[in-house]
Image (tube, rainbow, N blue to C red; front, side, top):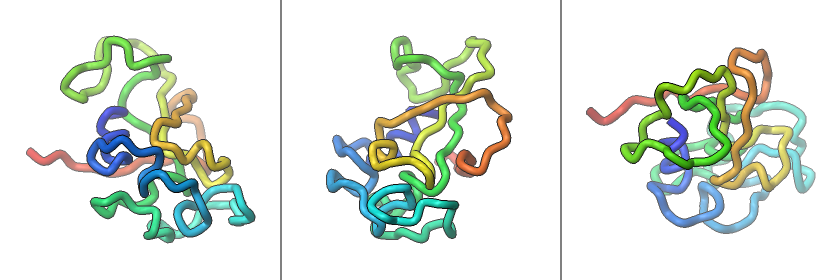
Length: 134
């Protein structure tokens, strides 16, 4: 869900600007289009380990943005308190998080989000397989 994605990106919910902390993005921290990093395509998964979260989750910022389960809402108003996805909303527009290889540094922020029609073919948005701890 969108809430779970942000919790993971913030190193288990910490008040920080980026997955790695509060330092601005550099080429060593994320695959993005800035500072001469050569953001012209994706790179190998986990190619910037210095940008990992404290838990070791890689590519939460840059490389490929990630679709989340929730239907798009303009705000978190009435978001489920259990970190679940919004239910009962009929909407084919989905949020994606994390920024991509062609984005600038602002898109690497944990709070950055965008949206698009689900099913749109693209080289800049993917998904992250995850499992719950049940």
